Length: 603
Image (cartoon, rainbow, N blue to C red; front, side, top):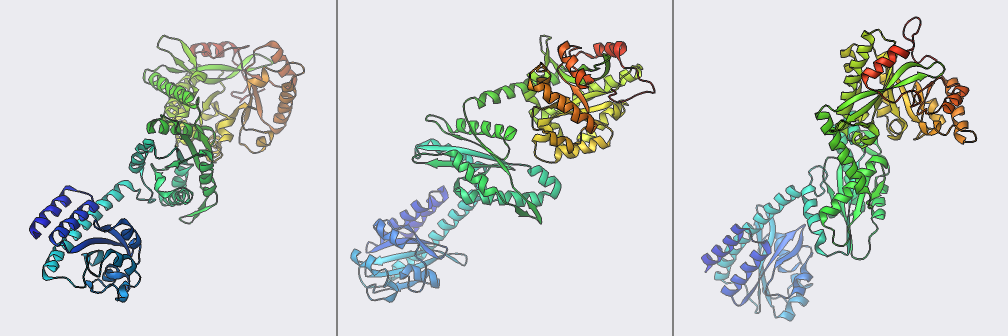
């Protein structure tokens, strides 16, 4: 009988049957062999009882024993676990060890209980007990049976612990202790089960983790990741908070009635406020979030994709804040994806080139320089302006390749103009935010023009207000400062349309201000733009900045600008952006010949 019992239980263990099913089968098999006994197995965890199997006892009995602390007066099982030795109580009614529990056992007719500890190494991991309806201890046969059962229980429990540990390692992030991406995917697949009326996803990206790693080292970055994880788990259920990537977290939010995902996201943002001490450095964590609430019929993958779109837009324009998905965001996302695809293909097929719009001295009509503008040729031969694929430049990889292509073409053209002896003074090159954050910008810029033999004094870097002043970190400013020290000049492009104010002119390291065409096109009597442009001109001239007016299209605009003292501009009144051959012709015919050689942006 014992051999048969062992074979049945060992087969269940080998097949990976659930621990509770295996132990219940063991108890039922033993009760069939010893009909006068009722069998139970109680797991021990954290010095507390946790009934594992008691198929012949009512549920309330097991529930009453759950979480009872082991001790010298904790019934037969609690006492056996406490002393790590078998305990036989032959009179439950009068034994002090059962004083707190006899009210549970006696109504069921139990008068005695014998409990034996189950060991895993030196640890007591469970107890195996017989309940009797008469006052007695175990027989010799029962002792033999229990010896076998204790061994089988130990094998089953140890295997279950190994399985659980493997699962923990599989589904737990080693650095933070949070559930990992695999666990998130598993949990996400269960969200559409109908258990909750409403549910949603919040995705979060840490801001500037790369900067922390590069500045203070990866150990500091790891400390910051751990602190962010702890703060998220302090306001969100830890079992529904996940680390799904290097600087990425996810939270599943659920409710049986109603759900306000913005309130949940606000809890996370609030929890992250306040300085964090990371490896000896004081850092203020920042995180950007995007989220989506599932609509009826939405699949988990659809909700996740919408949350991704929301996070993408938050990172693009609302760093440190939360954006909830709304219809229409996906359209922008799709448009950007298509732009990235089209530009990548055009780069591969060599259909990206530099065109040049001349910078004109307004009082003489002479060409003093160019702004290099990116153009893409379609498969049918049409030329498309950069505004039509600007979204692609927000992708770091595409922006880097695009900029490198433009730098190479511009450097070659500038060298050609110099070799021809033309009055070439300077060319402006536009830079995107991704160019500054990709790294090695100085090396890339200086390397390209050095290889082409073009002195850096001929190069002007054009940076929009949103890039220069909208990033809220020092990366862009530090790069610009370093580039100016290398001899390049910097123009603040589209001035007046983004984040700049007149106070920034006192602190930002730029040489040139380019007044946006939206102001120039409103240079008509009675329009407030007239006052603004005149004011900017006066301030800039007194501060020593050169001013270039963009988008000049009419003679009236030209006259007004000359009246304000603006002597440099560009626009369709003079020329649209042209290819390199046409630009060479413009320099040949209208280039500003200067006495004594090169003079930068001379008015």
